Image 1 (cartoon, helix red, strand yellow):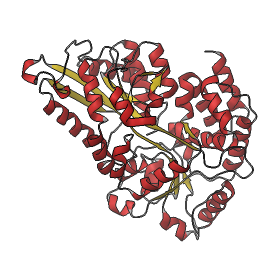
Image 2 (tube, helix red, strand yellow):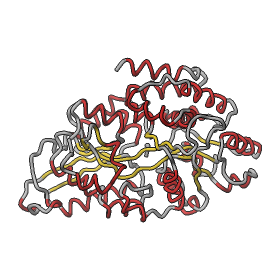
Image 3 (cartoon, one colour):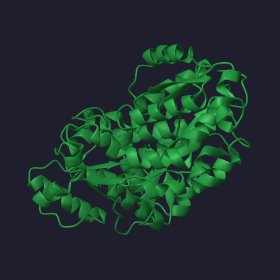
Length: 441
């Protein structure tokens, strides 16, 4: 998921919750050779407790991860796994940072890779998995790269995929829209037809911050040459005029009023009135979101099967005359890292989570595109098959910009984009904020 993340959470509440959970952590347990790795049986080993934080708060993902924890306990009778699902924005922006800074982090926690992980590595928060998961790195292939720093591995992904626009075909048909938009001008035409039919065109959870920011990300990806985007990941150089152009194009699009009424106060994933809920319940036609959106939306309706029968996906449209690669896609993945003081069993749990068998079941039962190539054949959702197909044709895949640029630059970038949506910032203010943040590092 995201990828799905941002601000507006009370740090004091998160801190107390993080400390309470961490009190149960096995932290510095020195127990070795877990049963899952072929070592001693559970009866020969001292008890170990592993705390695990993930971002699933609704079934099927919530129940699936609990089942995985139960299975690992059965394989390792001396291990107890305490699992907690935490809402994505709260987890990434408050709970994990507070827990890491307090020195009382969970043993295993959600990890999105990129710049935020680089900062965690620099601060000494993560267990170096190099040499412990080499076979898994080889098995998972290229999807592991965002979880590596300077050739060392600090986490493993369980899914990876690009985002695009989820839509309700029945609403498109009602508005007289044939096919799906391939260019921005075609998307604008579709928006107008939906408005003429009395249908909210695009839902965006701007109150959560990051869903609005992702619109600028995609405009930047289409406006900037791929070599400029790729270089910026490491140089944090945002002086190319294309970053201003991205904001100008987005401002023009916002001016057409394509988003749901009250989008500034709309959350991303919580309840029927969230942006996901609006599309899931047929109250808006489209939403720009990652591949995880299927599992989110099915948890927000009474009849998931009816939703799945009327839900489809298309890639973010290209921009006529823009300098970016029209096949470029923005995406990311989800994985887990072990805290630096986590017991060795944390590594074994991570290896189990990302095994071909578990990820095959994840693909079939939860959805998403699993990071393990051997598990991708288990993808059953027709939309995810389409996403995987488009991803295979893409000439350039870009990690989420805030993840890639790190929390300092990413935070200032997102704030400036939200201000653009609110009409209180100019297009040039976005790269200006990013440049200033990069210079402060």
